[in-house]
Image (cartoon, rainbow, N blue to C red):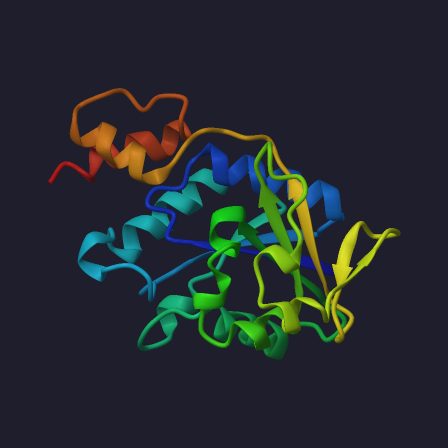
Length: 215
């Protein structure tokens, strides 16, 4: 089994998230992609994040009907900040032994990975699928990670990825670039502008029904 984990605040989830997940799933032949919303992101102020409950409901509405997409509230079950290394450990320890795990992350997030908790350990625990934008096709570990650590990941032409010492790889893959951001959607809702076609209609209706992003 090959599973992908896609984390984020998803405040709200939009077509950029969904299309990226769909393309990564096809590229790597994943059996499932699990959306894992962060409960208490260490890099963001909790006061500025919509409640986990609302973000959970929006994700469930967005992925409804896609049998390959699922949801996990694992980060809301833990106390304290939400750390990706703990989430990956949870899936590796609690699911099938022969599962091959891919941690899916956007380019901007990966370029800041050295600020994450136990990032060295995390990069050696599973595969990383980094979604890149046009113009960034030449990204390599040595452009982001410290030289001594990056040197441990050797380019493998067969997989078109950088294989690490534990056998897991970092892949840089371009996905369809949809210039959509959650922050922009929130601002547009606040300004009473249309967000139609930026996110699933069920999510858009949920936002307005519950008065999200107005204050």
